[in-house]
Amino acid sequence: MLSPKLETERLILRRLEESDLDAMYEIISDNRLADYIQFPRLSKDEELAYIRFLIKEADVSAEEKWIIELKENHEPIGNISVNDVNKRNNFCTIGYVVRYEYWGNGYATEALKTVSDYLLNERKYHLVEGVCNERNLSSSRVLIKAGFKKDGYVANRRLNKDGTYSGIEYYSKIK
Image 1 (cartoon, rainbow, N blue to C red):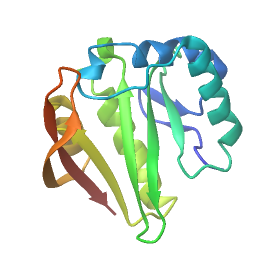
Image 2: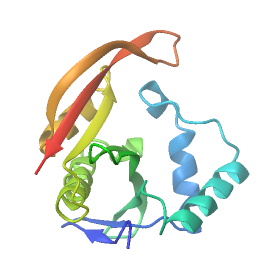
Image 3: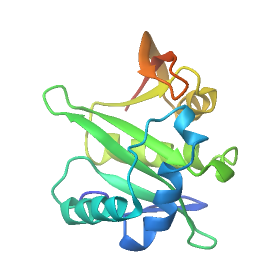
Image 4: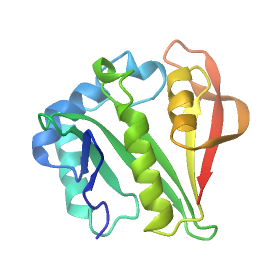
């Protein structure tokens, strides 16, 4: 089964459900997060249609996706997903986002470490890659704390919402 339920001390990482719509819509419409991540500008109905598509494809898509949920109250606070799979070279790219009000609590690091370990040990990828905007210092710290190492940097690859361009930092984790 792809995207199996995973648990940490404080989190449940589980498949997406239709009931996650409000939490996921809050993420894609939060302009504070858009400083670092370009979300599609979807209506709530379009986001629900996308969630339904992801649910339908969950058992066949190599792009696995999990909701990050707090164990204590089952509140969805973000998501983590395999965004790209390179079958030929046996690696995948992982992305994550946590609702802004939950930043600084170690939730992203906890989720990223758990999912990347699953991808390396259970799915048998040779390497898991993470990519972030150079201005997103918090995300860089999350990647490093989760066991990734910085591999490189490419300048001027990400259009920011203010019209400027930022570089991209590349990180990887191997077994």
